[in-house]
Amino acid sequence: MPRQVDHTQRRRQIAHAVWTVMATRGLDAVSLREVAAEAGVSMGRVQHYFPSKDAMILHACEAMAEAAYERAVGTAAPDGDGRDVQVASAGATPRQMIRTVLLTGIPHDDAHRAGASVWFAFLTKAAVWPELADVVRRQLDDGQAFLTSILRAEHAAGSLRRDVDPASEAVALLALADGLVLRVMVGSLIPQAATDAVDHRIDELFAGMR
Amino acid sequence: MPRQVDHTQRRRQIAHAVWTVMATRGLDAVSLREVAAEAGVSMGRVQHYFPSKDAMILHACEAMAEAAYERAVGTAAPDGDGRDVQVASAGATPRQMIRTVLLTGIPHDDAHRAGASVWFAFLTKAAVWPELADVVRRQLDDGQAFLTSILRAEHAAGSLRRDVDPASEAVALLALADGLVLRVMVGSLIPQAATDAVDHRIDELFAGMR
Picture (cartoon, rainbow over the protein chains, first blue to last red):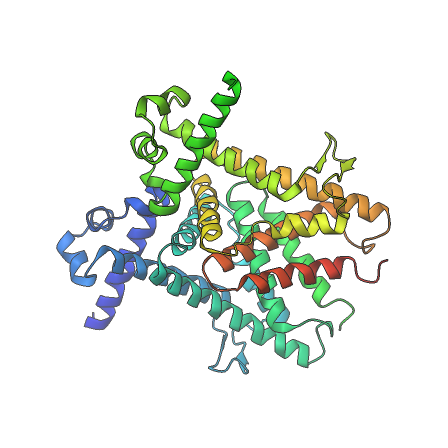
């Protein structure tokens, strides 16, 4: 296996172990020792890839953000200035893309609920850890830029209600989705109700169009 | 001081100490010893009020939920079946009440950001702690019932757009508010933008009415 691939895979394996420790025992239980045991590697091996516990946690957060982003947008991604959205994923319409981005985080089983709780643990810690806040903010900003670019294109094409402001609406839609995920995560809402809420909002934005 | 008042005040003092420990060192740093030190009382005193660490944390969560609810609704509260909303707080209109409920959690300074992070730490932990999930769900359900009752009254009075479903809209509005709080908490959104997003959504619900 090429060295670079191995390096990337090892770091990913360690990130997965961090998530597992967080899901079962919380962020504060994460240590180089615990993560090494969870990953089935030596502490020295973990330290070879990460100089400190903090660096390891920051990477685990970044890896989760990237995985979520890739899952949400598939192979579609805005280019640098966000104007040209390449929707290459199985011919999805922009409206379907918007729906996918908003529904991707809603947990439908215990495993996904645990995954959501790991992400919210990162968000919670970000309130008191500036470097982690940077990582989290980048993920939120990327998602927002991506959704804004789709909404902007739809708005220009006349598919969205005229009074919709793409940038503001992107924030509101993503905030709605996060709040719904939280409610499903703690069992206050069933996944279908969260899905319905997203679909209802999308219907409103496209109301009377097409 | 009457005995009952003293008991309630002591428990509230301990709840405050739990929040402070959580805000600075995280939920997993909470112990009877740490909380006693933070509250400036003996461990025996804490144990007199709470039989276990878990009972203390559950109470701290409940106390935060109650404080948030009281701050949000002021002296207004729905009666048992949610039909008769008493809006007694300084003559606020129903629309102002809705706005207050939705804006109350948005943090405008570091202290409130820390408070928000404590609440999200409870939510995160609730994903893997059923008893805590019960406490959290009650708070979410109470807020939802309260907002639903106001929206239902406004809908019946013809002040809301006809196509608005009060119960679903209450969930969507509260989810939006939570997602906005998260974004302000991690510094991805300024408080004013969160306020604008809420106001925009309220304007849409009342669009063309009155």
